[in-house]
Length: 268
Image (cartoon, rainbow, N blue to C red; front, top):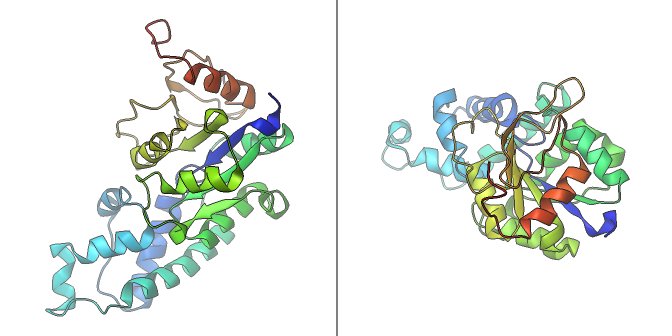
């Protein structure tokens, strides 16, 4: 098979960059402050909220939390407050990304450029707002390369991760073969979405997801790896032997082995 037969789909937050801690959390809190909303999320509280797919969904969940309900009185927050907060938050987030305060994950830019050069389809599938994802992608690979990468994000599907909808949509729009498509995720929620869509998933845990259970993943690595910061393989049930960096050749081997039953000869 040629490179054109293969597809590589990235999640955004926690995969392309460490966006949750350095981008989304301060942007949410900035929006609360700007709109005069008596709420601020701690790092510990946000670590719980990141398990919910979608920014508006996280705000809605926080509003339902008894810890915050008292701040809004008996009537609760106004019906239009969630989209209003999310709009302000998105603007703040994009400004943070443009200012370069959201660090990219190791090896992402290298692997994206390598996959594109090898003829792979590359896409991003995320629960974040499309404009937020585009900002991150532009900052990592540059606007020119980013223009060639389709983005499937936000409210484009009715059910967000862990539902498989966003990945099923991506497969359909890309015309991709599930057997030659691999997903890079950082969370158990995202991993379950990819696997439910029938896709192999390699996980690179981020700062908020380090303790989650990634047992069903095709592989788990600390990062995608660069020459000056090699990856550490945490789980390699198919015995791919990735080496210091994750490259397209290793992903081809992984996809080939994922199509075979996982036997004791594969397991570590």
